[in-house]
Image (cartoon, rainbow, N blue to C red):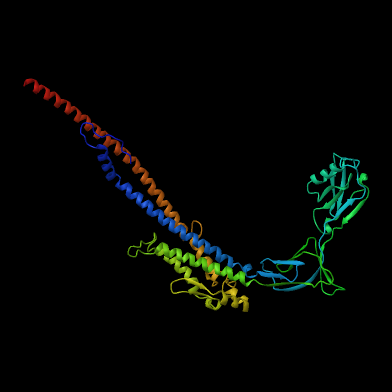
Amino acid sequence: MATGSVDGLISGMSTSAVISSLMQVEAAPQTALKSKVATQQKVVGAYQGINTKMQALLTAAKAIGDPTAWKGGVATSSSDAATASTTASSSTQSGSLTFRVNHLATAHSIVFDTPVTAVTDNIMGGSSFQINFADGPKTVNVTDTSLQGVVDAINKTPDLGVKATAFQVSPGKYTMQITSTSLGLQSKFDLGGSPFSGLGAVTPVTEGSDAELTIGDATTPLKVTSSSNTFKDLMGGLSVTAVKEQAPTDPPVTVTVARDTEGVATKVQAMVDAANAALSEIATQTKNKSGAVPGGPLAGNSIMSQVATRVLNTVSGGTGTNGSFKDIGIELTRDGRLTFDKTKFTAALTADPDKTQALFIDAAQSDVTLKNGLADRMTAVADKATQTNTGTLSRLIISGNDAITELNHRVDDWDVRLQARQATLQKQFGAMETALGKLKNQGNWLSGQLASLG
């Protein structure tokens, strides 16, 4: 705290240094409070660090605890004529499907056969025309009836479903093409009447048609159609996108969907890693002092030790009647960590997918507190620790921050007291200097009087 400068001119005393020393003694209680604030901030920071790790564990446990995570498939295609992809859902199937790409989806498009000599030439009478789709007509209003004006009117009409282009057929010869913005049979349209008398007759460019796959005998194949080139949910969770039409001599496309064991194993590994990260963070923050090595901010904290124990108990507590976690490659080490044998897990998942899934998700038990699945248990432990406002860590963080706020208020109160005390000391030392000055003057007068008697 600044003391100002009131060094004595009469006494010769460094009064500012004296006041500074006295103020350090006076500020000792405030210094102790600031130390408490710093300590409490480290404690809250430690809780927040553990909370972050436990939230990551909660996310990872929920990911593997979602039944659809076990339904994912990996799709492969035998030909570049089609690609395949899968989405994880309760209906995802494993298996294969063989077909031919007979047609790709096309957009309906027309052109006009009588060019005009300039894009500014008039091509229609009236102020509007209609474009007819299967679901009804749409009207285009026109203010400029030139070729370019009509093109602009079509392209500026919102949600019309077609776009127009004026292009040069040969030097000084221009016409118009109108093309649907969608694919398939639904893209077909025609013009009401013959609105563009200046451009002659309509000539089709492409007929709007659906994409088509054929399955089975070449003479009487089963046809599968789509308004786009993507056939969604062709099998449960499987979508196929046709890329190019196949010639009759091309070999058929075979799409195979296999269980995504690698994807499931990756999610399990993520949960194990998240659990170990949380355990490591708790160990770091709660470690005791050892010789010259300082302890963690939460040294000896029994509540955090209990959280770590609950994480470990999800594995050590067994699985009820569903088998052993060891059978799927998950075990505890002597130093309190989880290990995951991916090879053993993958073999178990391949051999018996339902049994393996049951070790993580206890679908038979409706009471969440009684579920034996590993993912269920991890989710419950992590959720209990991190739940907003009510979780173990959340309450400790809130309590710690409240304590810091209270301590900071007390520090601020001491600022006021110390400022007042400093002002008092400065006034007292100033008064002392004044008194000493008067005494010095009196002494000088007396000395003069005595000298005059001499």
